[in-house]
Image (tube, rainbow, N blue to C red; front, side, top):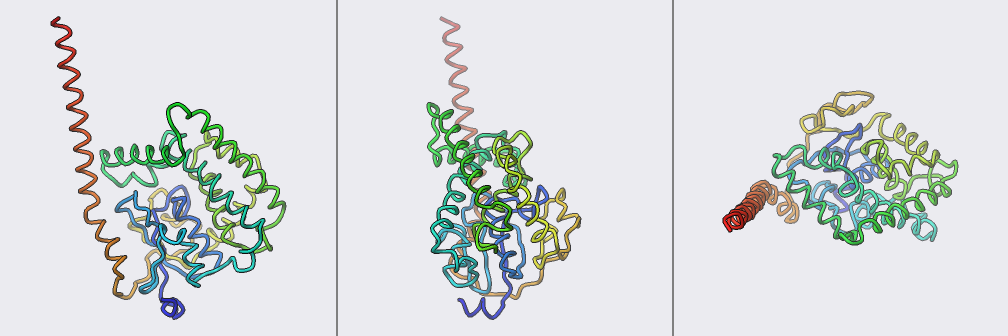
Amino acid sequence: MDEQVNQREEVTLVARKACFGLPTACPSCLPVYIYLKFAQTPFNLDFNLTYPDSDQIPYVESGTYVAYNNEKGGVIESLKEDGIVDLDSEVAGVPDWISTKAVVNTWLADALMYELWVGSNGSSAHKIYLSDLPWPIGKFLYFKQTRITKQLLGITKDNADRREEEIYGKATIAYGALSTRLGDQSFFFENRPTSLDAVFLGHALFMLHAFPETSVLRSKLLEHSNLVRYADKLKTEFIEAGSSSSIPPSHADPLSSFARGGTSNWSSKPKSKPKKERTEEEKKFRRRAKYFLVTQLVAVLVFLSLLGGSHDAEVELDDDDYDD
């Protein structure tokens, strides 16, 4: 596995599509993209639009090696553990680094997830995940993900206001601590990029570009000018100043400056990849795509039929009451 990567087979990051002026607008995909850029690893960028609720996306593949988002703590941790790309070797044992990254991966990740699926009108989530699906399926998946998010964050009807206050309160503390830690440095630790920088930069860029001005979380980030400068500077240096990755134009968002050319120097076509034998895990992953739309459509039809039946029952009941 490692030998194939070391032989410099083409590396491909499979992510969700580009929009909001970002190479991928998925908050899980963007940190992986940035991590590979920090490591100066040449890679192709492919988009998967087939099933937006998959927890395996993003994933990185090279030859028969595949690192999935839902394995080993995520793609970045897999790349580190497997000895493919490790930017954290000199800071992995530093207590401050460990605790700071934990705050980003918990408090800020929870706040972003809350605002994306619960604390907003859903326009950003729709554009990223659902805009390429038929309307009924997109609507169904949005409500499904909203329910899952509430469960993950422990939000109920009775504690919704309190949980919102707690989530935003922790985010406020996290931004303040990160601002103090960063100061006027270029990176958080050792004056060089680590996975902490990749994860937070992905978070910050998503907040600044994908959320509207009315976003509560975005306004809290904007209170710390050094964090905003940090995000803008690294975006210019690592994302806008040319790239060795290739974006497939057929899947790119037409509103994105990356798809139109803009300031990007990326190739208009992805590099051709040699035919390779897929692993069993990858075969299983790709087979799911064939049935995704069918199963989701069936689920929507069942949902609508049950809703219709419930409505008819209510009408009949109302008629009986009227007759009485």
